[in-house]
Amino acid sequence: MPSNTAKMVYDCVHGYIELTAQELKIIDTVVFQRLHNIRQLGTGFLVYPGATHTRFAHSLGTLHVMGKLAQRLNELGIIEDDEGIAKLRLAALLHDVGHYPFSHVLEIPTKKLNPNGEGDHENLSAHLIHNSCLKDSLDTFTPDDISSIITKKVVGNPFYSLIISSDLDVDRIDYLMRDAHATGVSYGLIDLQRLMRTITFDDDGHLAVEAKGRQALEHFLMARYHMYQTVYYHKTVVGFDLILQRIYEELIRRGKAYSYEEICKLSDEEFFNFNDSYVWNLLQENQEPPLLGELISRFRKRQRLKMIKEIHGIAISGRQEPNYSTLSLIQKPNNLEWLSEQSSVPKEWIFYSLPEPLEILSNAYEERAVHVLDENGTSIPIAKDPHSVVSMLYNSCSLSARVYTKDEYEAPLLKGIQECFNLD
Amino acid sequence: MSVDSKFKLLAAFKHIGKKIDLSNFDARLVFQKQVYLLQELGLKLGYSYGWYRRGPYSSGAASDGFQLEPIQDDIKNLPELTQDELEAAETLQELILESGENFPDKDEAYCMELLGSLHFVLKHGYPRPASKEEALRRFQELKPKFGEDAEIALELLDQKNLI
Image 1 (cartoon, one colour):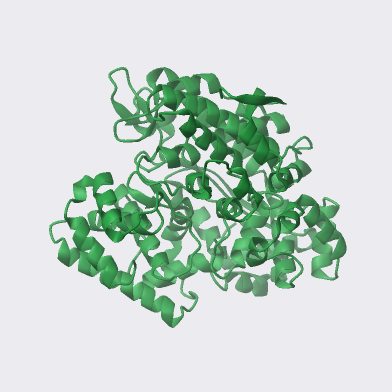
Image 2 (cartoon, chains in turn orange, yellow):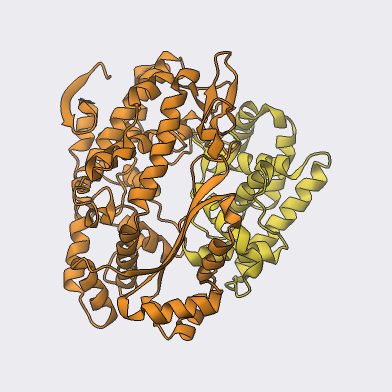
């Protein structure tokens, strides 16, 4: 933990989190305080009533986990000094500062309508670090020192990117623990101590754990899998995400909600107000019939869409799973119009979700795959580790393709799907 | 990443007669680097690339690639690309061909890792190099296996106005 602790904050997941004066300075900026008003799980609270926790708490938690990891890297000689530790802690603290209202939900339509296709929240975080009051709060560090870690632009030792984004990164560790705690779902329990004591890097720069951390790692990977199945891909949560995305997309098109270009030009005060309340206000002010008003009313009153078709299950090399591939054709250009014509259901009332197949393990040789170091120091991807139970699940993935509409269109849309895609 | 952009990527690949192949690590590496270069050549796809062991990598590109791979042959009505976008795809094709000619005893994964990684160090990497020479020196320290091939790659990137 930092030698220059200025304050301790009690966190429901990690206990006391120690903060330095410099970190407090950043936390006290309006741009950071905004995170108090962004729910970590977007629309998740509509299914898990306790899921009202915020990006603010998650950011502090990620800093805490990064602090532990940085300490470990310092012991291993990978990070040499307190300055290196401080830099990593700041990057963790600020990694989500550019998150959109309702977290990932509104990122999708905003990116979709940006002609450049840009709009990742990491890039928005980097933009804010360079162009807001955050810039003046970094003391000895330059904006690039911090933003390059968040956007994974540090060339040289790949550990900078791996600890921010990999099968075992600090962001993921905190959000799994925190989301499990808030939802009450018990799958997200993780042996953080064991992971932090055994995490290391092999000679080729792969993120790894020592053999005695194998079970903790296996449990972490399975926890992640179950959290996705139970919480993040919950059919009702996904249904509300789809409604809100369609509403927000329409509001941007009508010039009533911020486009990405406009977001980048907001003053600090304006950006402070770009939060979940901003969206709730938009919903209240724009209940124009017929379609937009009905969608907004449904969302505000928690009236679910009907999920009428789901391809769901575990597949080996699932990308070849025939029914999933067939239903995924719904995303083809013009296919939605075709389905709408065939079924006589307005295309505005056809919603689909095709998340990437969820792998329990990354491909063994993928850049972000985590390794295990055996007693002799030999490094092997956990997916290929003969001592790992999880490796038996290598190449298997969970698939989930869903189609939603409102109740009155259920029968014609189902019939249309059968006719267009030959799916029963 | 919008649905339209994902299909723009597929349209660009089809324009130069390429298929998305993610069947093994080298194939995925080639895909990653080619999408990276395509984007740098002006096809706006919105992928964020970070630096990993084998150079620039985007989880968004990987995700879209995996979604497109099994259905790519079934898609007929792809979005029309602008003249600039078509030229970006054609320049990528030239780069692929010319790197093969310049490094005849090397495979495509070698060439793409070299071109993609060198470009990333030059244009996006941190710490930012003060000059091409410094970037080249830094790259050769980071990836010594490429040796003097990096100098030829730098010329190729230069010829295609990528640096």
